[in-house]
Image: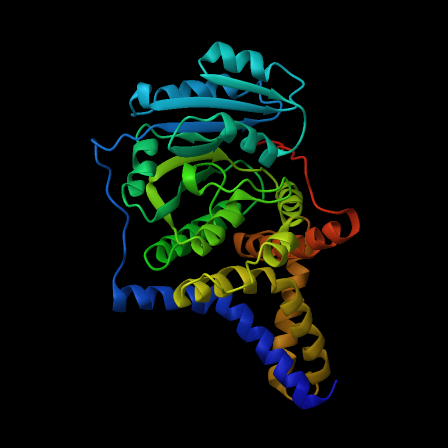
Length: 377
């Protein structure tokens, strides 16, 4: 590798990594100060559209009754709420317990994947708004009313709430990362709209709902897909839910690796990369937050390889190589002794999950079935 080319590759890779993790959130904060925010509508007690709340479940007998008790306690008119449990090939008592706990409709389906189960529920749903929740996500009483409030504005197609992860004892740092991610989404929402959601608490306008293939993801497909259809996607922090965190980082790594297996199809086939249909600001957000983030494994590899070429040219490159090797070493420690090293290990393994998930996709094809993460029920 020639030196001028190595320098360009090194500094270009570093710039991409710094932008997606640091300067992009700072740019959003600066935009908020310059342009202000475009906030969603506040909850209006008179706005009570018909909502179908869909809970996809696979072998959830441990939590499904508690989940339905939680839903029935929501501060929302019962006559305007349809509760649907859609069972994706459960082999336990999920459907029986869901019926007994008060679900309006329980679908007992063959195993086909989470998206297939959700699509089947949407076909039977009667609501003008579709709300979705995981079986292990518990909503605060006012969460649904806050979640549907933005849909009083006709250009809102999607809204996601705030999930607080309950820290279990272990070394998973997802909770710390998630707090950072929620702040970035709040900044995005105040500008052109969020670039991703979460599976624990979100809603979609029924007329805008796309029937996605089983390998796709509502969290990633809906915000950018609806932007191309002319809708805004918002983050509503007042719509709060709680979930248990995967206790250990190895379990979190496997969960993210499974999630990333469908990434190639979403980014390329579903045209996340294609800016047509985006506003200029939303394109900036997608490329900064999503595309560069998903390119992080490649950017890290290029930064390391080019740094090896440059290391003898300047003490600066010796220091940058040392910093990269220290990050890798932190990831190899089985039990990091402090939180900083645990965060470093978390970052490396999550970045690696993107690369390995993509490799799994190329080797084994797109995902279909889903597995619940151990320790989250």
